Length: 139
Image (cartoon, rainbow, N blue to C red; front, side, top):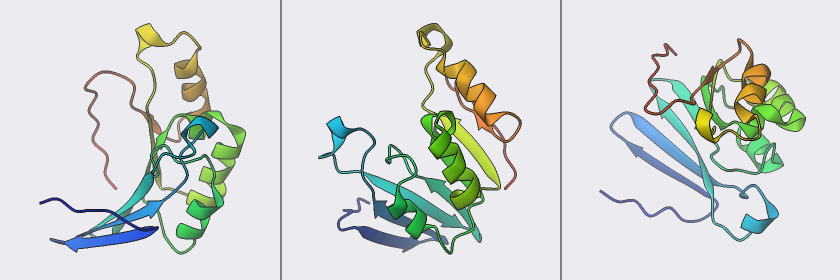
């Protein structure tokens, strides 16, 4: 089954799960014209947020989440590396659990992003940074 996502806010329900897509601006001026959606997944009364490559700490995402309890946020690592991103996560998203991804592999990390992400996330989350890494998380 294929679903066409269109508009600013699109919801799909099925088999005990809902998918809510929100059109959000892509991070970076060079991608200003790139269509981008974040997603909130609801399953079993829990909410999983994946804003994808959304502009860090964008007000539209804050409005989207104002009445939502986020149990798990899957975030690109810049959300943790940038002060405005960390503040937004702590004050607005307020997830019970955080997983950061989109990190370079160790052999490709010429700018020290892995070390910075590890410092930023501390013991408050999990980093996905190894090939085919798997985790088990009880949310």
